[in-house]
Length: 264
Image (tube, rainbow, N blue to C red; front, top):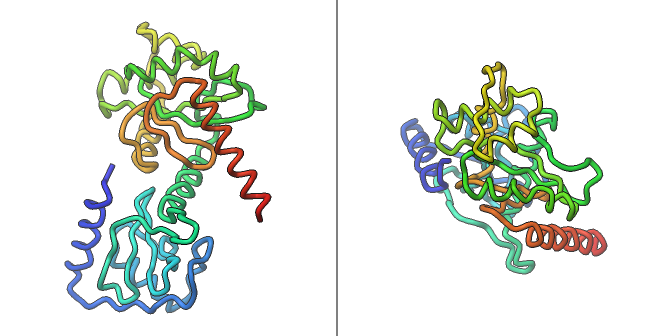
């Protein structure tokens, strides 16, 4: 994944290489909850033209008057209203102590995962489970195997696990091929369990398969390794958590959400 500093460097290089001065009108109001529609003459059109891979809707007024917020996956940057300055860092609401940049990252993860139907995942646990998490997994990762070996306990504690593939070694490697073999199996749940126990799967490749898409999605949500657990609220937990600890964390998140809803 492109770290924030590299991400910023690429964008600044792209802007500077254009040569012409960039002038962006200041937003008229604090941040809206979502990107506002782009009308003819909207300054975001010009800014997007100068930012490779972006579109006007990717920009929205930041919570700070005069700044534009731009995100790519979970990477968030802030630009001055005249387009001359960029800020690479988290933005906090001093009064509430909320990390506004992290809130945006959670929103991005939720949106990214919402684009993947469960029919394109390997799911363990009933639909009416108390909690549902999405786990990026590598067949050969030791802690991924440990997590999977305790699947019955996670399910018993009301945790439903939706798996996406993230072979850490990348395309055209043994771990990648194992992930493809799992997906191409008649019984994917059984095949994944067997593969994580070290069994060899003699399965013909099938196309299409979601491994490449899952791998790219892992980069977009901000993975640093596996297992990576994404909660329903968009939080990303890096690494293995024992069943009881994960259940406690999920209950705490749910309690916090309920209190917030009541306060509103």
